[in-house]
Image 1 (tube, helix red, strand yellow):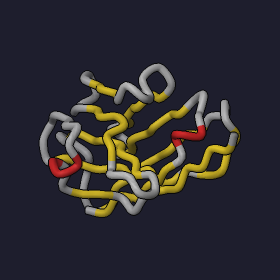
Image 2: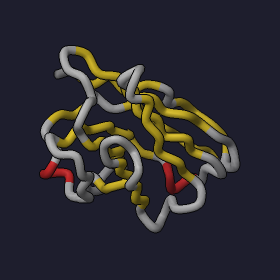
Image 3: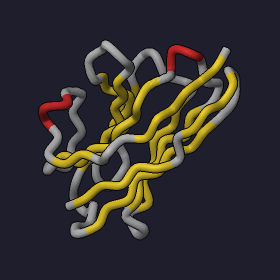
Image 4: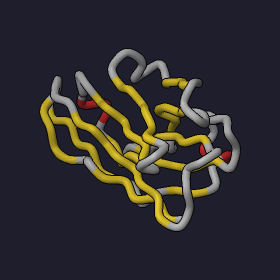
Length: 123
């Protein structure tokens, strides 16, 4: 399966962005999805996870209340709506698929990864 993330860009603090992640070669059906990010010099960190079919969601403390993860199981797409962006949100954002109905916060638990999309927030 190939995951394709898109929607990143350069924005100012306080702006919003919506990231999308679609899949080819495999349906999302039955599988949890996650968004992670990696800033320069830092480890990849969990941002948000959503179970199948979407009832259970979790956010990292750093984005809770500002980001919203959702999934469209017909379109085979997962979204990350980001609001009130801060400079510390600057990173490459990755979507990932876990071969389980339940999300996990550990990157090693995910089986497939997208190529990443850059989000840069200027102050």
